[in-house]
Amino acid sequence: MPDEQELKLLRERLRLFLLLILGLIVLMTQRLPFRLAGIVLALAALWVGFRLVGRLRRLRRAGRRTPGVITLVTGLSLAGVLFLLLVADAVYYPLVSDLESCQAAANTQQANDLCQREARNRIDQLIERLTEGANR
Image (cartoon, rainbow, N blue to C red; front, side, top):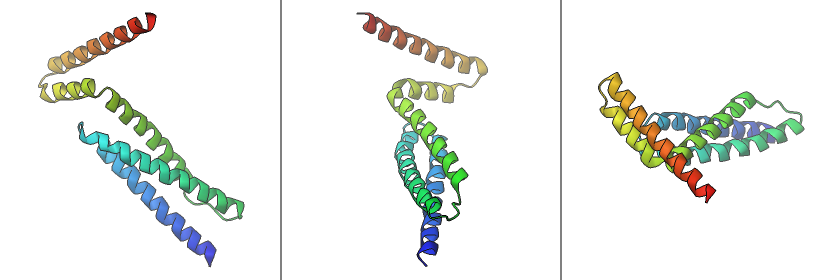
């Protein structure tokens, strides 16, 4: 039956999508630069997810039930948000990397607060340079 084969393929792709999302979540817990490998997983998850949307749409048009819609929408949303966070980490790599290193070495709350303050000062300087360049 072609419909059963289509459902089996859909389930396999949904499992692949969930594994990609799980891998992305695990990579988000890692330190830079390893976390940036999540960009590849996020793109793969988005690609597989949007392909699944097309398959689910075809099944729905054929009058079949469409399992996993809520999981798919939630996973696509999560992959999109994590992808944007990872791109921001890549763009501001020196700042984020220094902050993570500083916080890893901080033994007290005061040292952690100092790390946060230094990062905020660097962000303020960056914004100031960007606004000065835009006003010229």
